[in-house]
Every structure is written in C-alpha cells, then in structure tokens.
Amino acid sequence: MIIHGFVLLFIAYLLGSIPTGVILSSYWGKIDIRKEGSRNIGATNVYRTLGKSLGALTLLGDILKGLIPVAIAIWLLKSEIWIGLTLLSAFLGHIYPIFLKFKGGKGVATALGVFVIIIPWAVLISFLVFAGTLYKWRYVSLSSITATGSLPLWIFLLSYSKVYLIFSIIVAGLVIFKHQDNIKDLINGEESRIDR
Image (tube, rainbow, N blue to C red):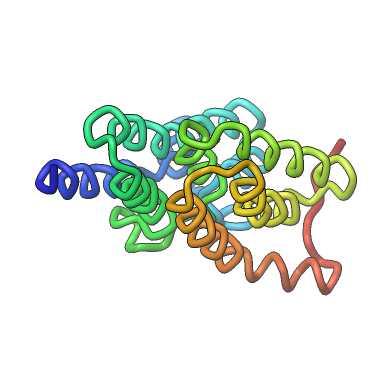
C-alpha cells in the first residue's frame, strides 16, 4: 500500500498541475490567460476574458483533476489518511504547478473536485453558501473564500471523519492565503463584480 500510495501522490500532483485554463485559452482563445484580465489561470478569469464556454470547460477540468486521483485513492488504497494525502497532493498541484514554475491558481474548483466524492453533503452546503454569497454581493472571490472557509464547519457538524476535517482546514487556509490580493481589493472596494 505504501508504494502505491506514494506513486498515487506523485500522479495526483502531476494531474493537479495540469494548467487547464492556460491550455484551453492558448489552444482556443489564442492568448496566454496569465497575461489577461486578473492574470489568474482559473475559470473566473477565463470566463471573463474568453466567455462562458471556455470558462465552464476550465471549471470542469479543474474539478476533474482533483476528483479523479481521489476516486482512485478510494478504490485502490481505502485509507482515509492516504485519501487525504492524495487530495492535498492534487490540490497543491493546482496552486503550485510544476508545469508553470509553481505559479498556479487559487484552488477553489480543484478543492471542490477533491472533496465532493468523500464529503458530498458538506460540499453541497458550501456550494449553497457560495451561490448565496455570489447572488447577494456578486464577488466570486468573496463567495469562494466564504464557501471554502466554511467547509470545515459543515464537516464537523455533519460528523464526517476527523481526518477529512484536518485536510479541509489545510485546504481552506491555502485558499484564503491565495486570495490575499482579492481580500485587499475587497477591503478597498476595488474588487471586480460579475454581472447578474
């Protein structure tokens, strides 16, 4: 199991490192998304820069590169610790991708992918928090921070595994850390909203 586990961690990191937004924007949009809009490689910037279709595809790709290795870990390893390490490895791949010199995205979509298969009800509540916050204030960053930051609470209240609770706290902390510029812009009233 240990050998399989470390191999899967490596694969998970490489999958997480695949820069979905960069690939799609380069191939179909003929641009480097890292030089456009907010310069973030995630779905929100792709959506704002290149439209709904490529934004949706970026979102799907970023979710799947988190979901797939976790699904494999569930099937192959059947250990909460190894599943937790796998989800963290895929998530770290997205925010610190080796293919982009460790300059990646903010991790929200990939966080959704790694958690949705193991703690679905907590993820659903967090999604509702995201949707409600977005509807009310129209800030994707605020919605992302609120939804991801509240995930550990839902895991605790729904009595999911303490292992997943610990990993959710780590992921939430990293998501908030990656949003520090957005937090400054929110405080200063300079953050971009999305149209209704």
